[in-house]
Image (tube, rainbow, N blue to C red):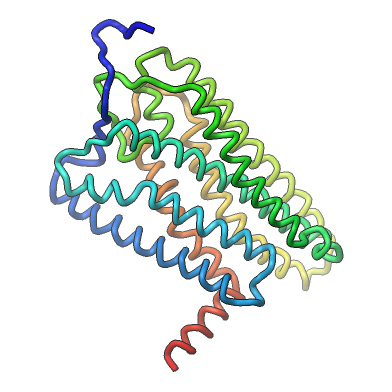
Length: 309
């Protein structure tokens, strides 16, 4: 296909980032460095604690271990490049690297959405069908669910995107700090209508359907909890509070990003929402689960005391 008038193919993308002021970028470099360090250490500790503690080898912690791994990959997809750009005057990224960021973001974001839906199902069985929990959530079923999460996300996010390659034209400046799907689509040489239809389709599959499943699961869970004795209600709710918090944060920001009014350009608001979604949430997820989970906190304290000895 011929290129539009006065437009040429781009070989790279220029990320405008947050600011051209060196002092502001230096401050942002320090802040994002601390956030990334906390993200890697927090999620890494969560994975190590779960793997090394036999009494945590249960379906819930198996899924939580996968969530921590996703958060490590998701943050690493964005922050190292962001840190380099904050100290550099040239914020260029090749089309290949930009494509890797886009596909990795789609894949990992879709994986996390599906995983949270599977974790909601696990909580539903634990609260509403406790006598059948060990049968329904036996290990071979858990492995199949995790395979469904990873493979299903790849098939529903990456494959449809690969079969519709996109040409990027000059001007190739992106008002963002990362190659995010909706932002890159706006650089397309051709009509963005087909690409936007694909994005909307993927959004419904990856975000809306899992969210509706989670919502339905918790409607049933809350209905069941209200029918049990008040002494057991707090315990039942405590097993779900961490998951609900993570779901609210992730789906809240994702819906703001993908269900907001369409715009020809990427606004600063989009960048700030993306920061929360791709940088902040991976950091606070292990904090939410560790602070609200007595078993994880107890194991962490025990290992800390053993290390001192």
